[in-house]
Length: 266
Image (cartoon, rainbow, N blue to C red; front, side, top):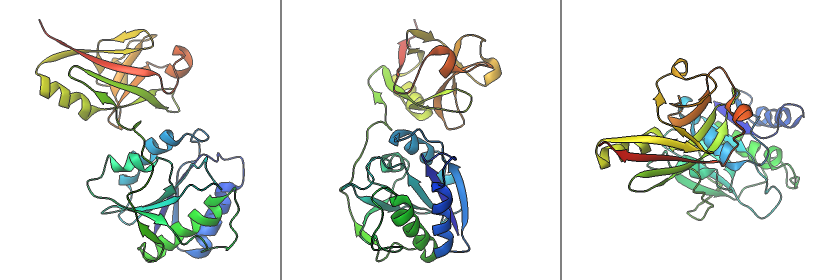
């Protein structure tokens, strides 16, 4: 049994450790894998991107628990979801949208049984008192039976999907990694599909007044002290400085608009 964890709790406090203790108390043989606890606080889209690029590398049957929950203690719902191979537990705040775009079939449930651990959950720590116990119960039983009701009424976000027109893809920076590389919501398939649909094209990438003409095949191909583009291992458009930090040195942050503009060859 495997449960993965993604949170914005960081590693200073006891929050992550307590959640693991709850999981192991309910399901002692669980293998708990930390994907990341360094999600920017309250950043729902960053959490969505990270889970969308992580979950399908795990064994079938894994329960993925995502606790980035700025609405904790409010009337927001808690969701569970099941795909062909995986289970998910997360707050209803748009994170699920990043899973939906990857999956042809997904069943989403609203959690109703919130008292697995306690009848009086803390209003500030649903990760410990509600979501971790639910994830542990799913891992032990491999089922959502008795935990909630199927629903199509949940929050969706459009950040996961760029805007695509006849000759342009308009996206945004959604994440930066440890190296300061800037990752966008533009997927490689978006680019190639537009190339295919419109015939032979040349394209330029525009961001923050910069114009990038080439998509590199690897980091070594980049030009030093200039912003470069590459399709990252996540298959999204990534902007980088060769042996540098694009976030720090180019003063570009999340939500910065990125455009790929196609031009017919003359």
